[in-house]
Amino acid sequence: MPITVVTADITQLRVDTIVNAANPGLLGGGGVDGAIHRAAGPALLNACRALPESAPGVRCPTGEVRITPGFDLPVRYVIHTVGPIWQGGDHDEAELLSHCYRNSLRLLREHRLHTIAFPAISCGVYGYPATLAAAVAAATLCDEPTHDASIDITLCCFSDAMRAIFQGALNAV
Ligand code: APR
Image 1 (cartoon, helix red, strand yellow):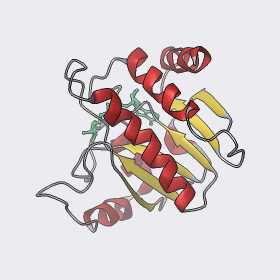
Image 2 (spheres, protein in one colour):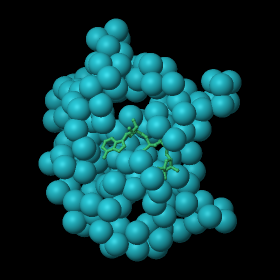
Image 3 (tube, helix red, strand yellow):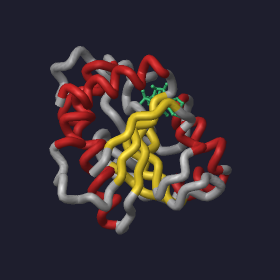
């Protein structure tokens, strides 16, 4: 299961699915969520709005995942996940962030997909310290069954600085 770290705009990547760092309402936002919705077009918002709410205003609880088509994006699917908001580290943030990565890979397998790109989940608006988030991502992804050579993972960072952090975390596992 090769893991590659790149600096790129995730909306440009040609993989089976990209992961969106969304909020529980799944109705768009800023950051990578906004970029993905802009690139996918209004059909993505309609698809998200059609997803059932598990609580008022909640279509995807933190750590869970939902999947939609990619519409105008160059990908078949978008896996939406909601990372934890950083609150100092003693509110299960690491476990919830790990669930984002693990549940995304579960959906990848369930849909018999092979290539996936993750943004730096929670490292923007949600304030998760990048070095800590990268360590969680690396540990989770490297804990996945390595025999799964059919799965190709890209960690898509939006800056070279972030790429260095995620590459360093992978090297340290
Ligand atoms: N491609 C790849 N990465 C991107 C892109 C892009 N086009 N745009 C932003 N990023 C990076 C950010 O630089 C950051 O490193 O994605 C990472 C995650 O940052 P956010 O998008 O702010 O996501 P997050 O911290 O998980 O906060 C989620 O922000 O946009 C809202 O609706 C979203 O409420 C939710 C919250």
